[in-house]
Image 1 (spheres, rainbow, N blue to C red):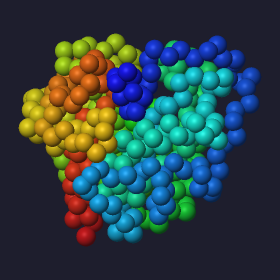
Image 2 (image 1 turned 135 degrees about the vertical axis):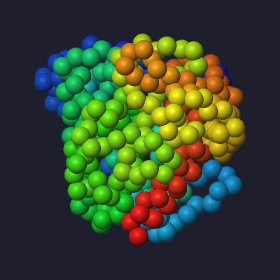
Image 3 (image 1 turned 180 degrees about the vertical axis):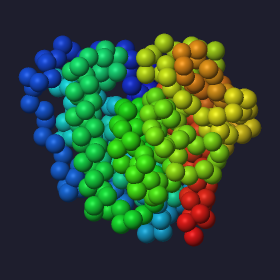
Image 4 (image 1 turned 45 degrees about the horizontal axis):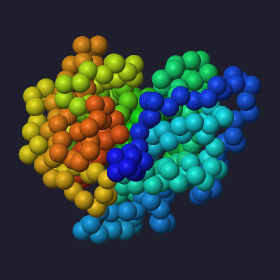
Length: 336
């Protein structure tokens, strides 16, 4: 029961869930698109109380008025089954899962340094990643159109020329990698990009003309990405074959192992409990044209997993939190 509760609190793409037999995508009328002028269609916004505001003890909340950088965060798949290819942003139960899981355990990592903007969007059902079909791609395209409209609304109404961090996980990264191509790669907006934390899905430099993977802890205008697996495990999932990973304990692509003494802290079932020096990592060539992270960790229950996808953020929660500050400082020093 404890393990069951653990996985209900953290979250993941659920590879054992198959969606019911859905009709053809074009035969359905999708749920109405969200209007991003309505605050309820954002899971997180600055200057209001929401799940992205939680800070781990003993930290204290820092006012959004003191933060000079914005995060545009795109949450992972929480839509496991249903009658539609895409979730309904008006579904209160679905929204509660988004808020209590990825917003609480991932988006919050940025709240020490950044204002957080996290749109609700008509996410594609999880099965599109395990049974790739033209209908599934249409569902992902519809989800991306929501993300794109939310980002355009953010740029027009909220950004005001402020530096930007793009952050995402899993399906969110499936969308953020497109967002980076459409709005940042070789575009004027790239000058505002502190970095992109595009985690838990394949992102490669070859997808872009100018955008590169970061290769130092303070490089800016670049992206970071990784996919986490238990040391020794060779994954077979299509979406990890061509992954390009850096090591978030060193923030480089150096293939040498990074011991757990480098780990500032991992997070498990308790949001307020910090497991310092719990996790080691090494970049592993998967033999399929990509690189993944091989992980050893003392964080409770996570070692039971071979695919540590659910813990891509949790394993390095405090490392990410510090690195965000370091990259912002580097960005500001260059701009001054």
